[in-house]
Image (cartoon, rainbow, N blue to C red):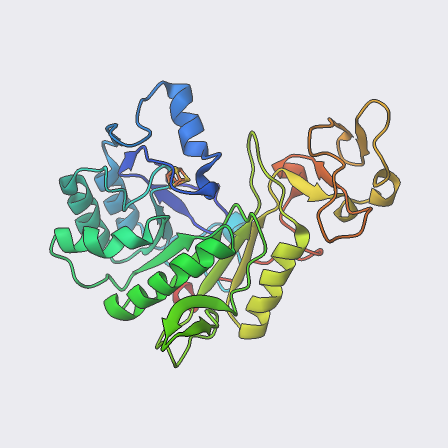
Length: 336
Ligand code: SF4
């Protein structure tokens, strides 16, 4: 748990427990698992115990007591000195993990409900477990100071989980819902989400605008980011651009979190000089770091892009978070 978070779209994180089970391609390089291996904890996978974090309940209450908080390095569009602190719940685990004892979940949920002076941000990869988990502790409504996001990495996950998220938003009265599209692993069209069939006809709706036929409300926030850390997979710039353009057209807040480890060579200053084939050494020159070590992906091209659209592993810091020269930090109206 941390009072000050390095995650760009939140202020603080609180973890009631650590440990999880991988449930999709977005979990392949889970940093929380990597971290737990370093500490020697056996808290990953089905059938293993999670580690309860002492002091998490007290920490959330402490944050709630100092709810008004602002610092210059967190100044983003529409976020004021009087704004309430945003707290991400569970950055090292999943709040709706069914391996977690019901009493742990109940304690966490009751604490979240009580800390109503915060903006609570919940991200899950287990949207299908949310209602069941809440029902098991007798909860049928949603706290109005909390929002719910799901992780979506590709179109398959978008089609599978967005209709569930929007149905829950409607049913439980969730004030805002969003997508954490990190790591983004493929192109996603949010304006054309498949939602089963009606009278044998496929239903497709625009998740950024909602749909009158299905009765779905719309998404309120889209966060996009590439993968970082060991084994990180590159994000095609056009996937991010497309999501940005979809959000702008629908006037849905778009937050570009990071490129991750990889960038397109064309994004890097002086890239034309280095977008040719790698030197015999298998290394590329890089204007900021002088040398970038060649790896299995270095110098490869994204499918469908010009031949000189090489990708380079430059590291998360050097890759930064500018998309076509702009920092996208838009947040939902609920935070302002
Ligand atoms: S759901 Fe989150 S915490 Fe759990 S394994 Fe996947 S990435 Fe890690």
